[in-house]
Length: 556
Image 1 (spheres, rainbow, N blue to C red):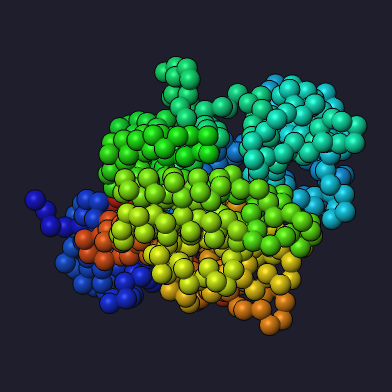
Image 2: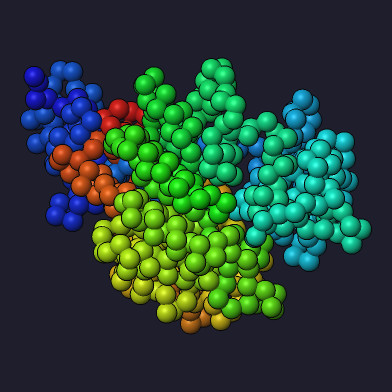
């Protein structure tokens, strides 16, 4: 057997993220592992053979493959064709965008927009069905906020979905009603807008998020093939942005089956972890399915072993759970999707089964309840390296900051999310939080300095998936008020959030997240030297080659 490399990336500024050997000029790959990392002359002289493929990085940076630690692959893929409204403001601009989109899709069952700012009309004027009726009265139209926790629909969509007159919903969900006794058009949380999305005919895409269940009836062979192609499109989008590993944050067995089909066809471009989504209406016995998924899928390409839950909603819709009242809504602290006692019961059983738990917790009240549940699980089941996670942590109390390190809990956070950091406006979020809570909002550095493992991600399609933009947002983060702590990260810290910490979050720090011999051959070649690029110009960088498992998954 030849000892030559299959692939060499050379003439590079290699950032290995390996403290013992931090920089290099070349990386050699054999099969799906890194064979060697070192200087260009040594690597090429010893390992280049007649069949070795060579990629000239032309002085650009080479970094470990980006690990997207919180995203929604199936839904993100489906949304690539939606009307993207991020950055659109004012009624006239909204009207022009919707009408042009509708004209280009005369046969769509439901017209869908995404990426909407809560203040898309103005800070004072909330969107209603009447605004949307003025734009498009005769076809069902709905648009979702960037956070995907609020949707606005026109009268036609509300009628067809059967919710114009309201509907009884579970905790934390609301159909906002107007003074006329009819739905005003604003729908808060998935149970409220689920009937709208069903009009699109993409029910299978939503199952991993909406119910955690499986398609019933099971789709035909043609439908399965179409879903596999849709999933593949999402993977291509991720590979284009340098992503080699995905930790999905919604899931069911069907998604695993789709990805397994792609793997069999040789079309699985990213290593993917799919959780079991536990909903508040499920019994503890349903966790047996999570254990079964974990047992059946445990390879380096496709795995499970995680239970995902939602404890609350979002700040902008007043559905995040707070310790104290919202600053702009006295007397209201949000309504949890689980009681603390119910959540602790689920955490106890999932932890007993050896499963990792990841919980959407945005408000400080939700963060505290989830940490309490993890602490109860450790007290009952004993200490272990569980690496349970709290997702988002947009507000936290000072008393709860040290508990992450004490309990070994991972802080999973998103650099694009703080208002003003990337795509999201300052309002209404800052007013919801209130000035007193700003210092401990989106507090990445505070948690890191307290000893927590902080992992970064985009939450795509909530934010743009590009990790380079996330790194830029982390580096350029500025306090909202003088005297508040600086939460920004250095370049190496931000890179670690998308590589080293991502690997740690999935118990794979011995195989990926760094470029060193014996590790998986997952890496990204960038268009320029990231260390020599000013933070304000990082958005100009892009991957020119993405390599996963030794195979090129994207190349300019």
